[in-house]
Structure formats: structure tokens, C-alpha cells
Image (cartoon, rainbow, N blue to C red; front, side):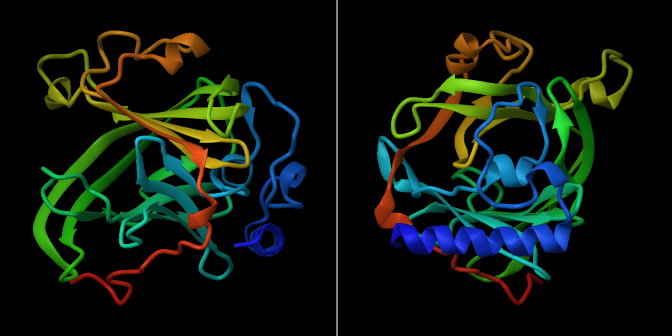
Length: 273
């Protein structure tokens, strides 16, 4: 997609989003993120950080793994991240005035109960659009697994009753590649673990995920921690964040303009049964 068309599409999306969702007035006028750094405060996670207003990005060691966003305005209000050149791999988020929530993920890795899942009910695995570093929010959802080739639920449902999101960092970090130094927000997702061994929550999984979103470039990094109670997981300085001892890391820092036109192949758009 030529730059002029990318700019036009982004501007139209911003107008639709701003009209339909009435985001915070300071940043409601354009999909393109402001250039100032508001350290510690996120005024609108969606408009500032989750939209990619530049080229698509790819994972340096695997050009088939990409990050390209696709936005559907009012009355649909959905944001997709296409995650592979095979466009059946994507995540879909629903957007409201105050929150954005993961609804469907068709990119479950090998070894998962199936290749796709819904977070049910829709809206339950939510992130606030406006929040502050150090703020923790709770969510309760159920992961409903399905096969995206048949659009059938498998019957397996995994409750996630004590989920947490934590805004760990907001500010400039040197991401390298095509991004250079850019403002990022870093969000952790994990299970709450009780300190009381007499409760079931004491045995919740210590695994954690970390999501990085760059201002005006969308999702740019993902970290998986097998055990958040050890190592550098709880450090918040940029040096430690860049090398936290994660179990797995995926980086989307290389421009991939050949993938600018990628849009999601909306498998099971008629429903999963």
C-alpha cells in the first residue's frame, strides 16, 4: 500500500473512531499518535499505542511472522492484529469508550488444546484505554477452545478467574531495528496468586506474558515468563526490561512494507458452534 493511501486510511479510521467512541479529548483528533512523551500516563492506549500508522513489521528471524493492524470503525469497532503472512492467524479486539478487550485469537501455538480460542464473554479480557504506570486491573474470563478449520468448539473451557493486567512502564526505550528509540508501554498479564496455602488461588500458575506497544507502531514485542516469581520479571528499568530473562521473546522491529496490504482472513465470521 502506498504511503498516501496508508495515511488516508488512518485518517478515516481516526475520524470514525473519534466519532463513535469519544476517546479522551486530548488525543481524539487523529489516529496518528502525538509526538510528545507523557511519561507515566497513557491518555488513550488504542490511539496512542495500539494502532500501527507505519509499515507492517516482521520478526527478524522469521519474515513470515508479521504485525499488521486492521481497523474496522463504527458500528463494528474492532482492531485486528494479523500475525503471519498466512492471514488466518490473527487476534481480534473489541473497542469501547473506556476499554479494549481481546475477543478471539486464532494463533494458539503447537501444544495448545486447539488452534484458536474465544475469551468469553466478549469484553471480559479487557485493558483500560486510560491508565497510569503502576496501575493494576483485574479480569475474569473463560477461554473457550475451538478449531478454526471447522468452526466448532471442542468443549474444553479453561476459567481464568483471577487475571491481572499491570501497566509496568511508559516512556522511551531503544527498540532497535526500524523503530529506533520510541515511546513504549509495557503491559503484564498474569494470574493473581494468593499467599494463603489453604486457598485454591495459592496454586495459580506463575506464568506471565508481557506485551510491548510502541507509540504509533502498535504491538512490537512479546515476552513469556514461565515463572514470574523469579529473576528480573518485576524489574522496571529499561536495561532489565530489554533483557529480563524471559522464557521466550518475539520482536517485531523490522519494517515490512510488502505486507502493508495484509488483512485478516476472517475464519468463522459466521460464528463458532
